[in-house]
Every structure is written in C-alpha cells, then in structure tokens.
Length: 457
Ligand SMILES: *Cc1c(COP(=O)(O)O)cnc(C)c1O
Image (tube, rainbow, N blue to C red):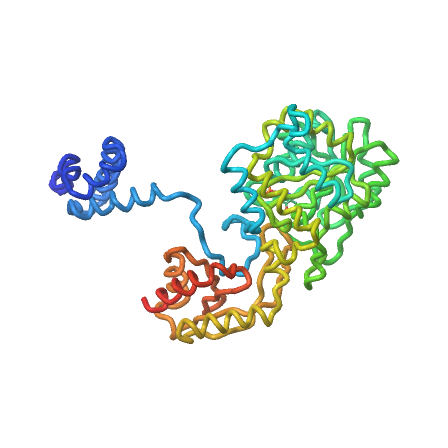
C-alpha cells in the first residue's frame, strides 16, 4: 500500500516543470528551489509511511510556494500588540520613539563618528557620549553599555569576582526567565555563590557572618518577575552599602528594569530606579535598555569610576559590546529623559500614563467602526516583561464573546493572529479582549481592518 502511494508521488523534475516553480527559479537559484521541493517530497513520504495518501502535484507545488514565501519574508514580522501587556518579551519588549528610530536609521544609512573624535581626528570611544548622558541622568560617576542586562551582570561578576565569592541572599538567587538564572550566571563568570538568609528573610548579620577574605562582592537582585509577600525581610540598599564600606567589599545591584521615572506616579508600585541605587552608594548598578527605560536591547552599567574601569578593561567587554544601531537609539531615548519629555515621547511611558478615559474612548471608537459586535469592558493591563510583577493598570478593552463571534474567543484570536499584520489579543474567561493601551495610534487603521476581516470570517 505504502509502496503504491510512494510511487504515486510526482518526481522533482515534474514539479520543477510547473509554471509556479519556473517563476520561483527565475527569482531564486534553481538549485535552492529544487532543495525546497525535495524537502516537501520528504515530508510527503513521511506522511505516507504514517498511513497518509500521496498528495497531488498541485498541492505539493502550493506547499513549496508557501514555504518559499515563508522563508523569504524578513523577520521578525511586525505584530500589533493588543494584549495590554506593555513590556512583552515575546513581542520584542519596548517599541522605540520616533527620535530613536530616526537616530537608528541615520546610523544605519551611512558612516558615522562611532569611534572617531571629530575634534582631533583621532580614534575615539563609542561609549563617550552615552556615558556622559548616563552620568547626568543617574548621578553615577561612570557608565558603560553592553549588549543586554544579562551580559552586563556577567561582565560585572567576571571582572570583579572571578575565582572569589559573591554573597547573594537565598531569596534573590532567582531565575529571570529565558535561561537567566543568577546561580548559573555566577558560576559561568567564575565566581562562587555564597547564599545567605532564608527564602523570605535576610538580615545584615547574615551577610556579615558569611564574609571571608575571599569575599569579592555582595549581589542584590531585584525580584522583577515574582513577589514575596507576608513575613519577609530584605536588607535595604543603604544598609548593604554601609556594610560594604565597612568591610571593603563591592556592592552590586541588578535592578532589572531600569525605570528612570517613578512608577508610583502612575498608580503602580514603586520600581527601584537606578538613580536611587546610585544615591544609596551602590558600587555597580545593572539594568536593561528595553524594559521600562523604553529603548533598544542593551545592558547598562552605572556606578563607581574605578569599578566601571575594571569592567571596561575586561576582555568580555569587547565580546559584549553594544552595536552602533542600539547605541544610536539608546542615546536618542535617553535624551527624552534629559529633555523631560519621556512621558510624551517614549511609547512605553505613553502607554503606562494613558488615562482610563482615553483608553475607553479608543475602545468605543474601535467598536463603532467595526459594526458594534463587541462590548467595551473594564479590565487590567499588565506591565510584564520582568517589570513590576503582578502590577496592573485599570483599562478598558473591546471584548467579543459567544455567541456574537463564531467559534468562541480562541477562534477569533486565531483569526486575528493570522491577519496581516498579525494582531495579538488576549483571552479572559469566555471573552477575547483587545486592549487599546498597547496599540500605537499609527497602528489603529491596520488593526481595525484585520479585526473587521476576523469578525466577518
Ligand atoms: C530582565 C532582567 C535581566 C535580564 O535582562 P536582559 O536585558 O533581558 O538581558 C536580568 N536581571 C533582572 C533582575 C531582570 O529583570
């Protein structure tokens, strides 16, 4: 039976003779298209062996066309985020401001003074402008930017504590997600983890009792994706700094998100800011560029000049260095803070600061322009992405529920996800929700078109 089906499969030559394959071979190399055809034939053979039938030549040709179309798209694809999760790691975290996009595009288009001092004509540092900005914004003596916060922490530990001990409270030896676990990062850096305290409580005396002559640093890690509630105690930054000064041990602080603005102003819990950490006297402070800072992927290190200098000299600094496009957009993003326009210009802050009335008005307008099949309901938007665990903002969503939408909420969210561009909604109980908070104004017309199609399917 299998043998007959396998023999029924069209040959590579027969498939390549079709008009569609000739069209593809005219654009791409013929050999490459033949390779894709072979892959599809292999798949068909596998299916036959599992009891399937040989597909028609036509459907094989269609499958090859779809695979070529898939492979030849640029990636990542643009997606509209109607989930209401502001910093969504799977959706690329922070969207950039206009100015950041423009700076990135300028840096990409031609040559730049990336490592050239135009005043003297001699070699310069790619970091110097950014370092000055970060010093002004955080009050730190020195700064350095690398590829991401995971590499920032790794660089800090490698440069300051390789072969020595780093004291970390048990409740802070955490996993941030995506394979970033503090104990593993420490091990990889060559430092030895010495954990102190208990899961819920750590006191200064716990640190003090663990100090030996091999202790290189204390590491404080912000619990950015979980919350410990109830009978808890953590050592405040100031106390730890005081102990560090008394014992000559460096104090390192991974604050995670790097919120430069006070989150409590927008009805959220307080997220530790790099400025506070610097003011408390931390030796090094690490944070991400693409979480609440609202910029590109980057890892930022600010702190004491002698410590930052040791990081700059470490060979890993070169391996983790920030690329010119991220550098350009990070600088442009930081300038918004310096100009005190961050809330108006940086998308994540615009989303967080959007009022309930403004979000509700957009949801109502979306409903009206798509046939009023939905209902505008109160819900909560999340901050997400390793920032402010469990913290949400009151919001208004456009909701679709059975029986007004065929196939239920899963079917609707699937149709939206298959739209062009794909629209990501969220499901809450029996309803599919679209949250205007995380949809950029310039994305609205695309969103409404995709939504209309999804509702009429
Ligand atoms: C997000 C996060 C990291 C990892 O940062 P990336 O920029 O994603 O590498 C490290 N530590 C904490 C506390 C975080 O919240």
